[in-house]
Amino acid sequence: IPVFYGHSEAVHIETERKLTATEARELLRAAPGVVVMDERTGGGYPTAVTEASGKDPVFVGRIREDISHPSGLNLWIVSDNVRKGAALNSVQIAEVLIRDYL
Image (tube, rainbow, N blue to C red; front, side, top):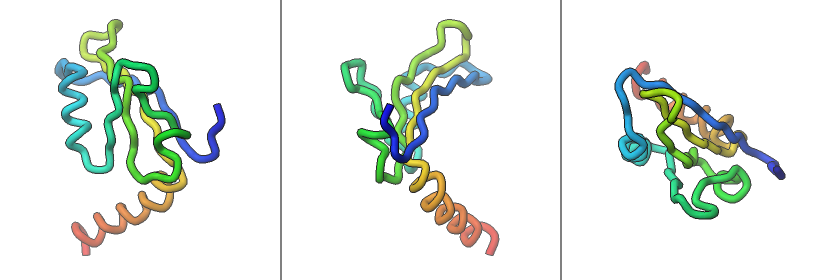
């Protein structure tokens, strides 16, 4: 997979109470800095090259309820690690420190 910058992660989470894929999508859509791309069609999920490269948001797709765990969810997450993981993240941390502690 040709990636110049970017992280791609297949994530499995287990919640205390069952969370449907629809509920997870709604929560993620409301989260600042997150873009949900979750269409059940060809190309309906994000990749580090086509969506995340050179952009600030974290992109989430392929949100599915896990058939192996009653309260499990599976997600595909991508981001540009230079922008979000380094530069933007540093600015966001500084903003929280100033807002909450200074």
